[in-house]
Length: 81
Image (cartoon, rainbow, N blue to C red; front, side):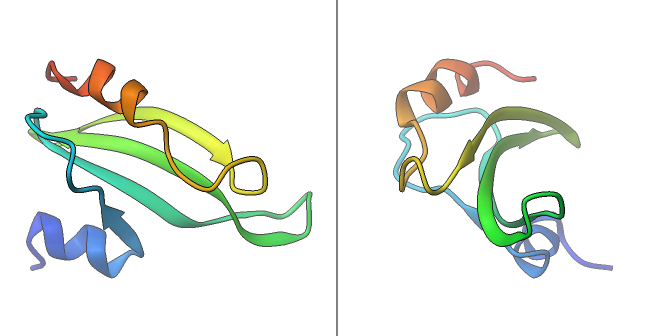
């Protein structure tokens, strides 16, 4: 059985580092497809995992901006989900 971090890495999720002191792990899902827009790999989902609970922090379109909102991540990841 895969460890939690190995599972997320295997699924195409990337752990976001350099956030300082946050509760749990924060990941970016990069391979999110939208069938109705006929595009691949354009959406990003930022989520936190703590004690097998998941909190979705942000969903954004990559065409509008390149990186996640780190202030939002820090705001929601200081406490457990």
